[in-house]
Length: 116
Image (cartoon, rainbow, N blue to C red; front, side, top):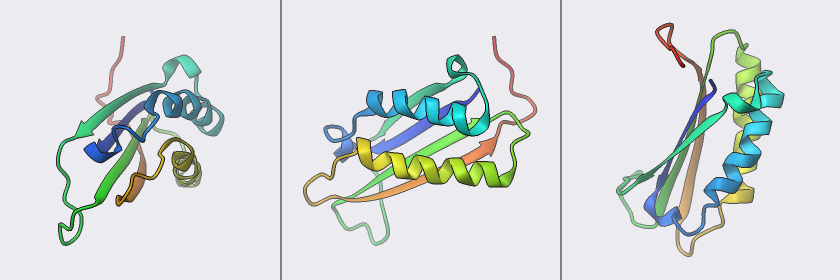
């Protein structure tokens, strides 16, 4: 915990500093939700094809999902979402002719979650 998954459209391959983003994201998560740095895990998943709106070309999607153990308030989750959105701009450079659609979701892990 936290389990972080970042889905991003293929056009962002060369403009998204994924490692740099994760290395700054983890301390931000720690400071906001009071967890341990060593517990933060981030996976990046490149999405080959996305469709936004009317399917016009030149649109990319970046979605960050952060799953936490239960116990954080809705306000803390909203604070983390906003801070992550602010952070994205430092690590994703605009690609020529690409409109970026960015979203963040912070949610509780299910009661069935286990780890080793």
